[in-house]
Image 1 (spheres, one colour):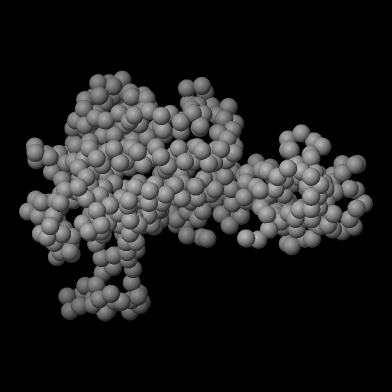
Image 2 (cartoon, helix red, strand yellow):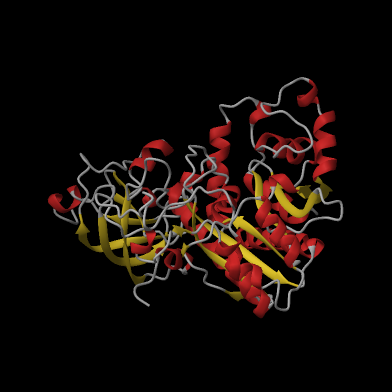
Length: 478
Protein backbone atom coordinates (compact mmCIF):
# COMPACT_ATOMS: atom_id res chain seq x y z
CA UNK A 1 0.00 0.00 0.00
CA UNK A 2 2.71 2.49 -0.91
CA UNK A 3 5.26 4.13 1.41
CA UNK A 4 4.76 4.35 5.17
CA UNK A 5 2.85 7.46 6.18
CA UNK A 6 4.17 9.99 8.68
CA UNK A 7 1.50 8.93 11.19
CA UNK A 8 2.95 5.39 11.21
CA UNK A 9 6.58 6.54 11.27
CA UNK A 10 5.92 8.77 14.31
CA UNK A 11 4.64 5.72 16.21
CA UNK A 12 7.66 3.53 15.37
CA UNK A 13 10.43 2.73 17.85
CA UNK A 14 13.61 4.56 16.73
CA UNK A 15 16.41 2.05 16.06
CA UNK A 16 18.46 3.92 13.45
CA UNK A 17 16.38 2.09 10.83
CA UNK A 18 16.15 3.48 7.27
CA UNK A 19 12.93 5.41 6.48
CA UNK A 20 11.55 7.35 3.53
CA UNK A 21 9.42 10.44 4.13
CA UNK A 22 7.18 12.00 1.48
CA UNK A 23 5.23 15.13 2.22
CA UNK A 24 4.99 18.91 2.19
CA UNK A 25 7.26 21.29 4.07
CA UNK A 26 5.52 23.15 6.87
CA UNK A 27 8.58 25.00 8.11
CA UNK A 28 12.35 25.07 7.67
CA UNK A 29 14.66 26.42 10.36
CA UNK A 30 18.41 26.85 10.02
CA UNK A 31 20.82 27.16 12.93
CA UNK A 32 24.63 27.02 13.13
CA UNK A 33 24.55 23.29 13.87
CA UNK A 34 21.57 21.95 11.95
CA UNK A 35 18.81 22.46 9.39
CA UNK A 36 15.37 21.44 10.70
CA UNK A 37 12.65 20.56 8.19
CA UNK A 38 9.09 19.91 9.45
CA UNK A 39 7.27 17.64 7.03
CA UNK A 40 3.57 16.72 6.92
CA UNK A 41 1.70 14.34 4.59
CA UNK A 42 -1.84 14.90 5.87
CA UNK A 43 -2.08 11.55 7.68
CA UNK A 44 -1.85 13.26 11.09
CA UNK A 45 -1.90 16.72 12.68
CA UNK A 46 1.73 16.14 13.75
CA UNK A 47 4.75 16.97 11.60
CA UNK A 48 7.88 14.85 11.56
CA UNK A 49 11.19 16.61 12.02
CA UNK A 50 13.98 15.87 9.57
CA UNK A 51 17.45 17.08 10.56
CA UNK A 52 20.23 17.79 8.04
CA UNK A 53 23.73 19.13 8.67
CA UNK A 54 24.87 22.56 7.39
CA UNK A 55 26.93 22.03 4.23
CA UNK A 56 25.55 18.48 3.75
CA UNK A 57 23.60 19.60 0.65
CA UNK A 58 24.26 22.27 -2.01
CA UNK A 59 22.92 25.72 -1.12
CA UNK A 60 20.71 25.85 -4.24
CA UNK A 61 18.87 22.69 -3.03
CA UNK A 62 18.36 23.98 0.53
CA UNK A 63 17.10 27.31 -0.86
CA UNK A 64 14.15 25.62 -2.61
CA UNK A 65 13.23 23.65 0.52
CA UNK A 66 10.62 26.22 1.55
CA UNK A 67 7.14 26.11 3.09
CA UNK A 68 4.77 24.32 0.70
CA UNK A 69 7.45 22.47 -1.27
CA UNK A 70 6.92 18.72 -1.71
CA UNK A 71 9.89 16.50 -0.79
CA UNK A 72 11.11 12.95 -0.63
CA UNK A 73 13.57 12.52 2.23
CA UNK A 74 15.46 9.35 3.07
CA UNK A 75 17.36 8.87 6.28
CA UNK A 76 17.51 7.09 9.61
CA UNK A 77 14.81 7.14 12.30
CA UNK A 78 16.47 8.18 15.54
CA UNK A 79 15.44 9.29 18.99
CA UNK A 80 14.76 13.01 18.94
CA UNK A 81 17.38 15.27 20.53
CA UNK A 82 14.90 18.13 21.07
CA UNK A 83 11.66 18.31 23.01
CA UNK A 84 8.25 18.14 21.36
CA UNK A 85 8.72 14.86 19.49
CA UNK A 86 9.89 11.35 20.34
CA UNK A 87 11.50 10.59 16.99
CA UNK A 88 13.18 12.47 14.18
CA UNK A 89 14.89 11.59 10.92
CA UNK A 90 18.61 12.02 10.33
CA UNK A 91 18.61 13.09 6.67
CA UNK A 92 20.70 11.24 4.07
CA UNK A 93 19.11 12.45 0.82
CA UNK A 94 16.57 15.07 -0.29
CA UNK A 95 14.63 15.06 -3.55
CA UNK A 96 12.34 17.98 -4.40
CA UNK A 97 9.16 16.76 -6.12
CA UNK A 98 7.70 20.25 -6.44
CA UNK A 99 8.95 23.67 -5.33
CA UNK A 100 6.67 26.40 -3.91
CA UNK A 101 7.97 29.91 -4.55
CA UNK A 102 7.72 31.70 -1.17
CA UNK A 103 7.03 35.02 -2.93
CA UNK A 104 3.73 33.71 -4.32
CA UNK A 105 2.77 30.64 -2.22
CA UNK A 106 -0.10 32.03 -0.10
CA UNK A 107 0.19 29.68 2.89
CA UNK A 108 3.16 31.04 4.77
CA UNK A 109 3.77 30.03 8.41
CA UNK A 110 1.60 32.70 10.00
CA UNK A 111 -2.02 33.03 11.11
CA UNK A 112 -4.48 33.23 8.21
CA UNK A 113 -8.13 34.22 8.58
CA UNK A 114 -10.83 31.67 7.71
CA UNK A 115 -12.25 34.18 5.19
CA UNK A 116 -8.90 34.31 3.39
CA UNK A 117 -8.63 30.52 3.40
CA UNK A 118 -12.07 30.22 1.76
CA UNK A 119 -10.62 32.17 -1.18
CA UNK A 120 -7.90 29.53 -1.55
CA UNK A 121 -10.01 26.42 -0.91
CA UNK A 122 -7.70 24.46 -3.23
CA UNK A 123 -4.84 24.92 -0.75
CA UNK A 124 -6.54 25.21 2.63
CA UNK A 125 -6.49 21.41 3.35
CA UNK A 126 -2.74 21.89 3.88
CA UNK A 127 -3.32 23.98 7.00
CA UNK A 128 -3.49 22.31 10.41
CA UNK A 129 -7.07 23.44 10.96
CA UNK A 130 -8.45 22.11 7.69
CA UNK A 131 -6.40 18.92 7.79
CA UNK A 132 -7.96 18.23 11.20
CA UNK A 133 -11.49 19.07 10.00
CA UNK A 134 -11.23 16.83 6.92
CA UNK A 135 -9.87 13.87 8.90
CA UNK A 136 -12.70 14.26 11.43
CA UNK A 137 -15.22 14.54 8.57
CA UNK A 138 -13.94 11.23 7.21
CA UNK A 139 -14.13 9.56 10.63
CA UNK A 140 -17.72 10.71 11.11
CA UNK A 141 -18.75 9.51 7.63
CA UNK A 142 -17.18 6.12 8.36
CA UNK A 143 -18.94 5.97 11.74
CA UNK A 144 -22.30 6.70 10.06
CA UNK A 145 -21.98 3.75 7.69
CA UNK A 146 -20.67 1.50 10.44
CA UNK A 147 -23.54 2.45 12.76
CA UNK A 148 -26.27 1.58 10.29
CA UNK A 149 -24.52 -1.52 8.93
CA UNK A 150 -24.11 -2.94 12.44
CA UNK A 151 -27.84 -2.45 13.14
CA UNK A 152 -29.24 -4.17 10.07
CA UNK A 153 -29.90 -1.13 7.88
CA UNK A 154 -29.37 -1.21 4.11
CA UNK A 155 -27.69 1.71 2.30
CA UNK A 156 -30.08 2.92 -0.39
CA UNK A 157 -28.88 5.20 -3.19
CA UNK A 158 -31.70 7.62 -3.90
CA UNK A 159 -31.73 9.78 -7.05
CA UNK A 160 -29.91 13.11 -7.25
CA UNK A 161 -32.14 14.18 -10.16
CA UNK A 162 -35.81 14.15 -9.20
CA UNK A 163 -39.18 15.46 -10.31
CA UNK A 164 -40.56 15.80 -6.77
CA UNK A 165 -40.10 18.43 -4.07
CA UNK A 166 -39.94 16.43 -0.84
CA UNK A 167 -40.04 19.47 1.42
CA UNK A 168 -42.64 21.43 -0.52
CA UNK A 169 -40.39 24.48 -0.16
CA UNK A 170 -39.96 25.01 -3.89
CA UNK A 171 -36.35 26.23 -3.57
CA UNK A 172 -34.80 23.86 -6.08
CA UNK A 173 -32.11 23.90 -8.72
CA UNK A 174 -33.52 23.10 -12.13
CA UNK A 175 -31.88 20.43 -14.29
CA UNK A 176 -32.29 20.98 -18.02
CA UNK A 177 -30.65 20.42 -21.40
CA UNK A 178 -32.82 23.04 -23.14
CA UNK A 179 -30.99 25.77 -25.04
CA UNK A 180 -31.60 28.80 -22.81
CA UNK A 181 -31.24 31.10 -25.81
CA UNK A 182 -34.01 29.27 -27.71
CA UNK A 183 -36.43 27.97 -25.09
CA UNK A 184 -39.25 25.90 -26.67
CA UNK A 185 -42.73 27.18 -25.77
CA UNK A 186 -46.19 25.67 -25.74
CA UNK A 187 -49.06 27.41 -27.56
CA UNK A 188 -49.95 29.06 -24.25
CA UNK A 189 -46.41 30.47 -24.01
CA UNK A 190 -45.23 28.26 -21.12
CA UNK A 191 -41.88 26.43 -21.31
CA UNK A 192 -42.40 23.17 -23.19
CA UNK A 193 -40.66 20.65 -20.95
CA UNK A 194 -41.80 17.81 -23.21
CA UNK A 195 -38.79 18.74 -25.34
CA UNK A 196 -36.41 18.58 -22.37
CA UNK A 197 -34.18 15.57 -21.62
CA UNK A 198 -36.64 13.91 -19.22
CA UNK A 199 -39.76 15.15 -21.00
CA UNK A 200 -40.80 16.99 -17.84
CA UNK A 201 -39.48 19.44 -15.25
CA UNK A 202 -36.58 18.02 -13.24
CA UNK A 203 -34.60 19.31 -10.26
CA UNK A 204 -31.67 18.45 -8.04
CA UNK A 205 -32.97 16.61 -4.99
CA UNK A 206 -33.74 18.43 -1.73
CA UNK A 207 -34.04 15.12 0.16
CA UNK A 208 -33.87 11.40 -0.43
CA UNK A 209 -36.62 10.80 2.10
CA UNK A 210 -39.60 10.01 -0.12
CA UNK A 211 -37.65 7.43 -2.10
CA UNK A 212 -36.14 6.20 1.19
CA UNK A 213 -39.63 5.45 2.49
CA UNK A 214 -40.25 3.26 -0.56
CA UNK A 215 -37.14 1.27 0.37
CA UNK A 216 -38.24 0.91 3.99
CA UNK A 217 -41.60 -0.47 2.80
CA UNK A 218 -39.69 -3.48 1.44
CA UNK A 219 -36.37 -3.76 3.33
CA UNK A 220 -37.67 -2.57 6.75
CA UNK A 221 -34.64 -0.42 7.62
CA UNK A 222 -32.71 1.68 5.12
CA UNK A 223 -30.58 4.82 5.18
CA UNK A 224 -29.48 7.29 2.55
CA UNK A 225 -26.29 9.36 2.72
CA UNK A 226 -25.82 11.62 -0.24
CA UNK A 227 -25.69 15.18 -1.58
CA UNK A 228 -28.79 17.37 -1.43
CA UNK A 229 -29.37 20.82 -2.86
CA UNK A 230 -31.33 23.88 -1.71
CA UNK A 231 -31.55 26.97 -3.88
CA UNK A 232 -32.41 29.31 -1.01
CA UNK A 233 -30.57 32.61 -1.00
CA UNK A 234 -29.18 32.11 2.51
CA UNK A 235 -25.91 33.82 3.33
CA UNK A 236 -25.70 32.48 6.87
CA UNK A 237 -23.13 30.53 8.85
CA UNK A 238 -25.54 27.55 8.95
CA UNK A 239 -26.68 27.12 5.33
CA UNK A 240 -25.13 25.69 2.18
CA UNK A 241 -26.62 25.26 -1.30
CA UNK A 242 -25.06 21.79 -1.55
CA UNK A 243 -24.68 19.59 1.50
CA UNK A 244 -24.82 15.94 2.52
CA UNK A 245 -27.83 14.37 4.21
CA UNK A 246 -28.17 11.20 6.25
CA UNK A 247 -31.75 9.92 6.18
CA UNK A 248 -32.73 6.63 7.81
CA UNK A 249 -36.27 5.32 7.27
CA UNK A 250 -37.62 2.51 9.43
CA UNK A 251 -40.75 0.42 8.94
CA UNK A 252 -42.64 -0.44 12.17
CA UNK A 253 -40.97 2.43 14.10
CA UNK A 254 -43.31 4.86 15.85
CA UNK A 255 -42.42 8.30 17.22
CA UNK A 256 -40.83 6.98 20.44
CA UNK A 257 -38.68 4.47 18.52
CA UNK A 258 -37.64 7.24 16.13
CA UNK A 259 -36.48 9.46 19.01
CA UNK A 260 -34.54 6.57 20.57
CA UNK A 261 -32.86 5.86 17.21
CA UNK A 262 -31.91 9.52 16.60
CA UNK A 263 -30.44 9.95 20.09
CA UNK A 264 -28.50 6.68 19.96
CA UNK A 265 -27.21 7.49 16.47
CA UNK A 266 -25.74 10.93 17.24
CA UNK A 267 -24.25 9.73 20.52
CA UNK A 268 -22.59 6.76 18.85
CA UNK A 269 -21.00 8.66 15.95
CA UNK A 270 -19.77 11.47 18.25
CA UNK A 271 -18.31 8.84 20.61
CA UNK A 272 -16.50 7.32 17.61
CA UNK A 273 -14.90 10.70 16.82
CA UNK A 274 -13.90 11.19 20.48
CA UNK A 275 -12.23 7.78 20.45
CA UNK A 276 -10.54 7.97 17.04
CA UNK A 277 -9.73 11.67 16.45
CA UNK A 278 -8.09 12.62 19.76
CA UNK A 279 -5.13 14.55 18.32
CA UNK A 280 -7.24 16.52 15.84
CA UNK A 281 -9.90 17.31 18.45
CA UNK A 282 -7.24 18.44 20.94
CA UNK A 283 -5.79 20.73 18.29
CA UNK A 284 -9.22 22.24 17.49
CA UNK A 285 -10.01 22.60 21.20
CA UNK A 286 -6.81 24.59 21.72
CA UNK A 287 -7.59 26.67 18.63
CA UNK A 288 -11.00 27.54 20.09
CA UNK A 289 -9.50 28.39 23.48
CA UNK A 290 -7.08 30.79 21.74
CA UNK A 291 -9.99 32.50 19.97
CA UNK A 292 -11.98 32.70 23.21
CA UNK A 293 -9.20 34.54 25.04
CA UNK A 294 -10.35 37.81 23.48
CA UNK A 295 -14.02 37.28 24.42
CA UNK A 296 -15.73 38.24 27.68
CA UNK A 297 -16.12 35.30 30.13
CA UNK A 298 -19.85 34.84 29.51
CA UNK A 299 -19.34 34.48 25.74
CA UNK A 300 -16.65 31.83 25.92
CA UNK A 301 -17.54 28.35 24.74
CA UNK A 302 -17.35 25.13 26.76
CA UNK A 303 -14.09 23.29 25.93
CA UNK A 304 -14.74 21.19 22.83
CA UNK A 305 -14.02 17.74 24.30
CA UNK A 306 -16.11 18.54 27.36
CA UNK A 307 -19.04 19.60 25.14
CA UNK A 308 -18.84 16.41 23.06
CA UNK A 309 -18.53 14.14 26.11
CA UNK A 310 -21.48 15.93 27.69
CA UNK A 311 -23.71 15.12 24.70
CA UNK A 312 -22.58 11.49 24.64
CA UNK A 313 -23.01 10.96 28.40
CA UNK A 314 -26.38 12.61 29.13
CA UNK A 315 -29.95 11.61 28.21
CA UNK A 316 -31.59 14.18 25.93
CA UNK A 317 -34.50 16.15 27.40
CA UNK A 318 -37.81 15.30 25.67
CA UNK A 319 -40.81 17.60 25.62
CA UNK A 320 -43.62 18.70 23.33
CA UNK A 321 -43.60 21.84 21.21
CA UNK A 322 -46.51 23.15 23.33
CA UNK A 323 -44.47 22.71 26.55
CA UNK A 324 -41.50 24.43 24.89
CA UNK A 325 -43.64 27.45 23.93
CA UNK A 326 -44.83 27.73 27.56
CA UNK A 327 -41.20 27.73 28.77
CA UNK A 328 -40.27 30.39 26.21
CA UNK A 329 -43.25 32.60 27.14
CA UNK A 330 -42.17 32.50 30.81
CA UNK A 331 -38.49 33.08 29.94
CA UNK A 332 -36.54 36.17 30.92
CA UNK A 333 -35.49 37.06 27.32
CA UNK A 334 -39.15 36.94 26.22
CA UNK A 335 -40.33 39.10 29.13
CA UNK A 336 -37.49 41.56 28.56
CA UNK A 337 -38.13 41.56 24.78
CA UNK A 338 -34.61 40.26 24.12
CA UNK A 339 -35.67 37.69 21.52
CA UNK A 340 -35.42 38.97 17.96
CA UNK A 341 -38.44 36.90 16.88
CA UNK A 342 -41.82 36.79 18.68
CA UNK A 343 -42.93 33.74 20.66
CA UNK A 344 -46.43 32.23 20.44
CA UNK A 345 -48.07 28.89 19.74
CA UNK A 346 -47.90 28.20 16.02
CA UNK A 347 -44.55 29.90 15.30
CA UNK A 348 -41.72 28.06 13.61
CA UNK A 349 -39.06 28.22 16.34
CA UNK A 350 -36.00 30.21 15.31
CA UNK A 351 -32.50 29.11 16.31
CA UNK A 352 -32.42 31.71 19.15
CA UNK A 353 -35.47 29.98 20.71
CA UNK A 354 -33.99 26.52 20.18
CA UNK A 355 -30.67 27.57 21.67
CA UNK A 356 -32.37 29.16 24.71
CA UNK A 357 -34.07 25.84 25.48
CA UNK A 358 -30.85 23.87 25.07
CA UNK A 359 -28.20 26.22 26.46
CA UNK A 360 -30.01 28.24 29.10
CA UNK A 361 -33.07 26.30 30.25
CA UNK A 362 -32.25 22.58 30.14
CA UNK A 363 -28.50 22.91 29.63
CA UNK A 364 -28.48 19.73 27.50
CA UNK A 365 -29.69 18.51 24.09
CA UNK A 366 -33.44 18.59 23.66
CA UNK A 367 -35.88 16.59 21.54
CA UNK A 368 -39.06 18.55 20.74
CA UNK A 369 -42.14 16.66 19.54
CA UNK A 370 -45.71 17.21 18.30
CA UNK A 371 -45.36 20.42 16.31
CA UNK A 372 -48.33 22.30 14.75
CA UNK A 373 -49.12 20.68 11.40
CA UNK A 374 -49.04 24.07 9.60
CA UNK A 375 -45.29 24.48 10.11
CA UNK A 376 -44.35 20.91 9.22
CA UNK A 377 -44.26 18.87 6.02
CA UNK A 378 -47.30 17.16 4.48
CA UNK A 379 -46.02 13.60 5.07
CA UNK A 380 -45.99 13.77 8.90
CA UNK A 381 -48.54 11.69 10.79
CA UNK A 382 -51.41 13.70 12.30
CA UNK A 383 -51.98 13.43 16.05
CA UNK A 384 -55.43 12.61 17.38
CA UNK A 385 -56.11 16.30 18.05
CA UNK A 386 -55.85 17.03 14.30
CA UNK A 387 -53.75 20.13 15.12
CA UNK A 388 -50.29 18.68 15.68
CA UNK A 389 -48.13 16.08 13.97
CA UNK A 390 -45.79 13.37 15.25
CA UNK A 391 -42.67 15.33 14.44
CA UNK A 392 -39.46 15.30 16.43
CA UNK A 393 -36.51 17.70 16.19
CA UNK A 394 -33.23 17.21 18.03
CA UNK A 395 -31.72 20.51 19.21
CA UNK A 396 -28.03 20.89 20.07
CA UNK A 397 -26.04 23.60 21.87
CA UNK A 398 -24.48 26.19 19.55
CA UNK A 399 -26.40 24.95 16.53
CA UNK A 400 -30.10 24.60 17.26
CA UNK A 401 -31.80 21.95 15.15
CA UNK A 402 -29.42 19.19 14.09
CA UNK A 403 -32.00 16.47 13.30
CA UNK A 404 -35.55 16.74 11.97
CA UNK A 405 -37.79 13.72 11.72
CA UNK A 406 -41.25 12.29 12.23
CA UNK A 407 -43.53 9.34 12.15
CA UNK A 408 -44.83 9.32 8.57
CA UNK A 409 -48.54 9.35 7.72
CA UNK A 410 -49.37 5.80 6.64
CA UNK A 411 -53.11 6.36 6.13
CA UNK A 412 -53.89 6.90 2.42
CA UNK A 413 -56.94 9.19 2.89
CA UNK A 414 -55.24 11.38 5.49
CA UNK A 415 -52.07 11.70 3.43
CA UNK A 416 -54.05 12.55 0.29
CA UNK A 417 -55.94 15.19 2.30
CA UNK A 418 -52.66 16.80 3.40
CA UNK A 419 -51.27 16.71 -0.16
CA UNK A 420 -54.34 18.66 -1.34
CA UNK A 421 -54.14 21.03 1.68
CA UNK A 422 -50.58 22.09 0.88
CA UNK A 423 -51.31 22.43 -2.84
CA UNK A 424 -49.22 19.59 -4.27
CA UNK A 425 -50.52 17.85 -7.41
CA UNK A 426 -51.18 14.24 -6.29
CA UNK A 427 -50.24 13.08 -9.80
CA UNK A 428 -46.63 14.13 -9.11
CA UNK A 429 -46.54 11.80 -6.10
CA UNK A 430 -48.71 8.91 -7.34
CA UNK A 431 -45.96 6.38 -6.53
CA UNK A 432 -45.51 7.71 -2.98
CA UNK A 433 -49.25 7.67 -2.29
CA UNK A 434 -49.54 4.17 -3.75
CA UNK A 435 -47.36 2.66 -1.00
CA UNK A 436 -50.22 3.58 1.36
CA UNK A 437 -52.60 1.46 -0.75
CA UNK A 438 -50.54 -1.72 -0.86
CA UNK A 439 -49.54 -3.12 2.53
CA UNK A 440 -49.15 0.17 4.37
CA UNK A 441 -47.41 0.12 7.75
CA UNK A 442 -46.45 2.52 10.52
CA UNK A 443 -43.01 3.93 9.74
CA UNK A 444 -40.69 6.73 10.78
CA UNK A 445 -37.47 8.42 9.84
CA UNK A 446 -35.27 11.45 10.31
CA UNK A 447 -32.77 13.60 8.47
CA UNK A 448 -29.41 14.87 9.69
CA UNK A 449 -27.46 17.46 7.74
CA UNK A 450 -23.97 15.96 7.84
CA UNK A 451 -22.22 19.35 7.78
CA UNK A 452 -24.12 20.44 10.90
CA UNK A 453 -22.81 17.36 12.66
CA UNK A 454 -19.25 18.10 11.49
CA UNK A 455 -19.71 21.73 12.58
CA UNK A 456 -20.73 20.61 16.05
CA UNK A 457 -17.94 18.04 16.45
CA UNK A 458 -15.15 20.34 15.20
CA UNK A 459 -16.38 23.40 17.09
CA UNK A 460 -16.09 25.52 13.95
CA UNK A 461 -18.47 28.47 13.66
CA UNK A 462 -19.14 28.58 9.91
CA UNK A 463 -20.58 25.68 7.90
CA UNK A 464 -18.53 26.81 4.89
CA UNK A 465 -15.45 25.60 6.74
CA UNK A 466 -16.48 21.96 7.25
CA UNK A 467 -16.98 20.93 3.61
CA UNK A 468 -13.99 20.94 1.23
CA UNK A 469 -15.54 23.15 -1.46
CA UNK A 470 -18.56 25.07 -0.16
CA UNK A 471 -21.42 26.10 -2.46
CA UNK A 472 -23.39 29.19 -1.46
CA UNK A 473 -24.95 32.18 -3.25
CA UNK A 474 -22.53 33.63 -5.83
CA UNK A 475 -19.91 31.01 -5.05
CA UNK A 476 -19.08 27.93 -7.11
CA UNK A 477 -15.43 28.74 -7.67
CA UNK A 478 -13.61 25.48 -7.13
